[in-house]
Image 1 (cartoon, rainbow, N blue to C red):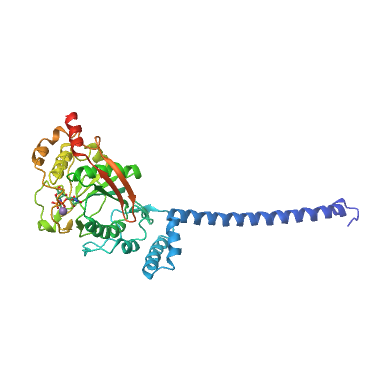
Image 2 (cartoon, rainbow, N blue to C red):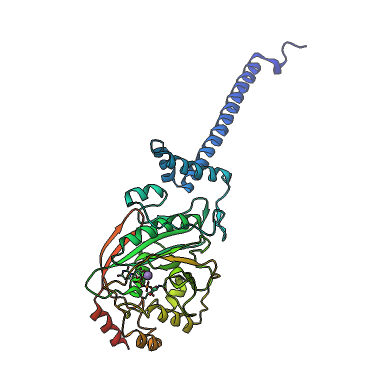
Length: 369
Ligand code: UD2
Ligand code: MN
């Protein structure tokens, strides 16, 4: 070995040491950065997951720790479901949701709102609900024409919310209340429900729902896949038989585009009767087939009631129905004249209070004819 070998000079050995140290430091830094990155990545992923899941539900779980057992149990059950889905990408909801039970014992009474609110903690103000375990195929507005039937409404809400949640629907419940002083106009209230609800959310499906009809089976899907559907075929009041084939009263489901194509319901029917027959004819006139579930399944209970004083049988109804075709184009959602007096986002429904001036409404349509 030669002592003057330039490769082994002190300077070179020193430099090699320095390079080695620098190399090790850089290696260390890059490893930590990559760990950090993974950590951040994981953090971001879990944040995204929480965001998808909806932070408010998470908060709800934390808050509910101090609440009664049922609330904790309900939220734990929901949490379990999410874990069961193994945090996989959220999928589209099935057309046959897994939690349906079929024939139901209906609730014939309901607790006061203060109590009922606690039973449905996942319903957001305004009666809105969106499933977290899957993405709904459509968004559904339940429209309830209403006046002076508070108890019926409470019972209906108590029955509907759990069913709609099991059906995994992205839904909102809208109660359209007509002020006193004029004859009740069910069909026009349903048109108003359509017009007001689409201002609030992009609904693609409408369920028009009498306040006194309670579904007896949760397989009666409140969606609009396919043609317009008459849901309340078998009502206990009519001995579970269809009084006549073209009946379209009670509860109906209509896709937004179909509803718009027929210009909605007529606005001309003040008082009881005829408006449902007019809608049936409208739909058929525009080429739609009306579908129904089997009679054994689409069963409803009607809460017992008398005819309301503000909803006297409409003497003009037969004439209006037989001449309806002339008005379809002018009499509907394209000519809606009403005043919205209030909109209230209550815990289990949105209440929209409107006044309708019969003389003005009838006059508009005369001019258009
Ligand atoms: C039948 C129809 C209904 C409608 C009506 C004629 C069925 C099952 N039902 O119901 O859809 O065609 O005949 O107009 O075929 N309402 C109030 N307050 C009132 C009056 C009516 O909230 O003062 C609302 C409420 O949602 C009620 C609906 O309008 O369920 C129909 O009125 P009804 O229940 O008095 O009439 P009914 O049972 O003969
Ligand atoms: Mn009724």
